[in-house]
Image (cartoon, rainbow, N blue to C red; front, side, top):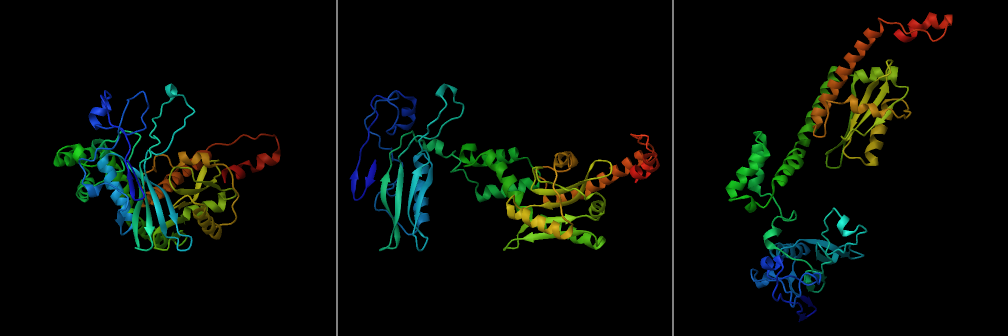
Length: 403
């Protein structure tokens, strides 16, 4: 069905003797299906379960653009499809939106170079023409629907739409239960089972177990960032009080939120004096941090400093290098970063918090320092044979390698 301008034009086809299994579920199938599926005669979507004012039509007015968007999304959920904003036009002077097109999210046309029998991935694009157009009426100062198309080229299922990721949402009650259970170290699957039993089954929840787990990892973990930053700053200040040679710098944004940090332990400063001829910059560990690495007298990697990045943008790296440049001498780059995965192995992972990271960093330094002492002890009991018969090499071999 298409409504355009002030006139109403209704065209479509109705199912006649349909044997397709989709027909029994939907009752109607919208135009645009392949000819080998069904021969059909009208395709107006069944709106019997909707009130008249819930169905989009030309001339509908809304005080704000967001209200028009919410209206169409609500209709789409009840009708059995999902939406997306396709285009938005802005005023050249005020930069305010003046019109917008909201489409069915299966509006694209997919052209694959892979033959159908060989194709492994599913295709959601169906070339659907269902959409609405809304524009700003300057005279009335509100938004009006000036074109509506309710015809779909694919089946729509209100029963299945509630499971689309666009419509899955955690309620405030569910979030509170998830947070409480997570603090009590109750497993996510047990929490999901309890919530589904409370709602009368998983289908009545409005979200999946995966959504619950994503909330725990993405929301609850990131909500502790501010506390982590405060504790990290306290740690830096304590270390500075203990040893004035401890160096740190922290970058904040306009809202005083953490962006990046760089710090150098007193042991790292001492190591740099001996092993800072060549410094490797490694940022490939999988965490948003940069490590400054040198090579000690045993030919092994030694940590010279570390930085945590708020993101991987160029500006973050520029700030880190500026802080490092102020603290140390010039750096020459090399390619020794491949060993840093082993350097941090067993200490860090993708879910390590800021505070855990800083403390584990200190633990790593302690372990590596102990291993260096063990290497020194082992080397003190052996002599590296001379490669030549030069008396000069024989004379200084002990001084060169033992030191």
